[in-house]
Length: 488
Image (cartoon, rainbow, N blue to C red):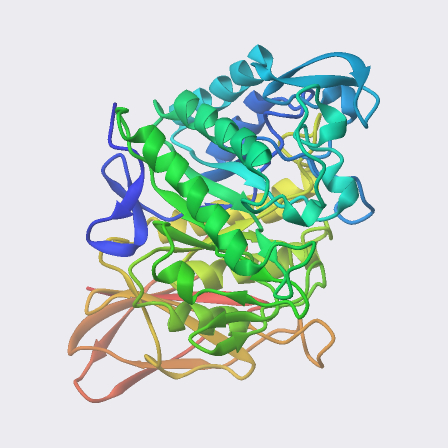
């Protein structure tokens, strides 16, 4: 068995997988692929591989509450189609009117699907983020969980939903730990996985029925301990990614602990308002708002660039419920900004559903192909040596935001995006202008790349002189463009 995916030894901002530097980029993360019975995982993974998407995200227990927001989530199966790690034995009925679970009996069908998914992903070279547990968000969401006392025959305790992510209830914690341990034991054999303890953990500063953020972080550390302890005597040791507890009311997402003493190897972020780092707040946009907020994303990437843990924009839902070119364009720009910022990016493509496992004709032509272009471009660079730069450009068109990823002195990728929000005057119109930058003396090749078409313009050669900025006119573009500058 090969070394599992790990943080790259020469560049802690990227990963190494099967001997190569890799960036995580996806428009998939169909986290319901195993637990949703009608979902045809073979069709889904074949398209993921064809699009050169490098990662997908898999939930192991959480079943999402039906809602009018993002109703197409694969994590919202009908009750008879929900496959949990436990066997439904009854005879009593659970809250969803299906037989109750026996938490002492593991479900063969679930683990067969889990292994089939991970094995096929491995064959394709696709990384899988295995998410052990999740926030339950509300009483009705908690009511769908097999660990809820109304859903099993094993006498789990009555709790408030907001205490789920804590160590307050030893009997419940024992069941959570047993679940995590079982998943790790079953999946240790795979080199193409890493673990996340909990999706979107959160606490309330005032406590009460809510666990406090400190309690949630203590619980997350205990889950990480389960992973570490379980793998101690096993063949493989996998990295753990995660985010520290966010804070409800007022909402904020601190990250100092995550980059510091928190027992994770990589930091996940779900970009929203109130993302905090070293006392600075970054408003990355409201959930499902169709906001763009590129500057805050870019600046967060730059602020954290010297940290020794990779930063993964683990689930960006700024516009994902809008399955149209406008929403997809927002995510294309955010994805390029993250990757050119030396980070990693994940957006949910809700065009993918059971019976539509490779999306729609429209999503194939837009977001899915755009992610292929991004993956191909970023992996054409020497990621082990590439670093994000600030202030390198000397000129750029009005209304554009620049993000620069470079192997200094050899290869520069300058991503320019129209950063105007959709309701601002001129947003979406053609952009004209020039770029300027300083290069080491010598001959350089410059070409423009389209994130939409995946095509380069013919390269031109320029002669650079020390201390003099090179200035070049850009072709007219809409939305975004990349300038690639390489040593001749």
